[in-house]
Image (cartoon, rainbow, N blue to C red):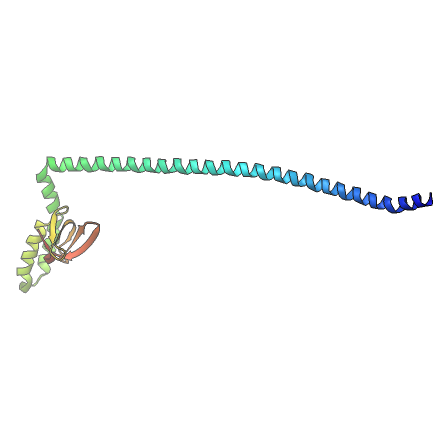
Length: 175
């Protein structure tokens, strides 16, 4: 009988400690399961969000492409309209192209010295021949280029040779 009482005093606290530890483990297990459930839900939400982001990026890309296509269409229409107008009245187009060069040519020839007049006349005739959009031969590269801008005061010409824009002297290009 004393032995049983002694065992109960010794074993009872141990038994209670085991029960308490078991309850703590159950709580931790329950909390871990809750965290796993939350993690799965977060993962599902992440996958859905990634899919929505991809769909949004794709729709934005298509929208940008559509806007660019629309802009290109408008620009092409305007360009075709100007070309048709220019083709319809070539006399007006040539007068319009010559008129901006006239004041520059007058100031250029008035600043030149008598010694330079011979080369000035050659340059003036070359400038008059070279108009925006004309094809010229660039002797340095042995290639054809498009005239973008003519600056008779500096005797320079801006041309586009493929993707390259070059500023050359008037002597470097041949009509």
